[in-house]
Image (cartoon, rainbow, N blue to C red):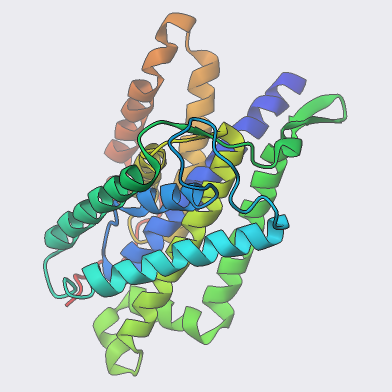
Amino acid sequence: MLEALQYATDAVSLGSLYALSALGIGLLFGVLRLINFAHGDFISVGAYGLIVPSANAMAVMYFGALPWPAVIAVIVAVVAFLALLSEAIVFRPLRGASPATMMIGSFALSFIVQNSLLLVYGSRPKAVDLWANLSRPIAVGGVRFQQLQLVTIGVTAVLLAALVLFLRRTRFGLEMRAAAEDFCMARMLGVRANRVIAMAFALSGGLAAVVSLLYVAQSGILSVQMGVPLMLFAFISTVIGGMGSLLGAVLGGFIVGILNVVLQVMLPGELRSFRDAFLFLMVIFILLLRPSGLVPVAAMKERI
């Protein structure tokens, strides 16, 4: 039982990262019908914002002298600004194009961001010791948990609650929900498209920044493509949860995280290297049963 609780904590912690990443994708898809494949690179930018540009494997913390609330605020602001900049420069001119064209634009933006990081920081991985004190285990009722896992779960819960309140209790949130339901009708009723879309990009960038900090604190390693695997699993989470459904994105993120840990525990040692293949097989099985996702959305009209 104690071992099962530890595995459950691992699964929920990993699912929290996937859920936050999937939320960033789901927010944009709900409003703009855009799958932003550069979202993983925004996560990388948030992580690299912690260090001074250096070709050395060991990097110096750039914001090390600041208190951690200030570090979080700076990184979130930087990534949110980058997301807003990408909306203004890349996606706003493509807004009237087909979804496939916008998706290609997101791929192009992804390569630009990756190569910019390569140009500034080099290709060698960087070691970052972020919040090392959170890696210490704590004992609760005979079960040893990593503090960072509990922090990840707690941060995810707080952000999910804050996002629900934002969408339900604020004017901006109501406008975003109206735009996700029927964008054309929302514009006729006075919803300002540019403001709603910009808010969705800013929220998506802020979530990417939080994911980057939590992920770096867990792994301790930076690489230019570190956000790509998170983006892949987040995209899978949104698909199995239901494209356009924020609840589905969160649910899908936790399901993918739980399946990941369960396969790691249950598979024999010689098959663990094929864990992702088994995970994708299970995803295919879920989609065969529920092609529209676990939480399908009725309003899936193309944006004009």
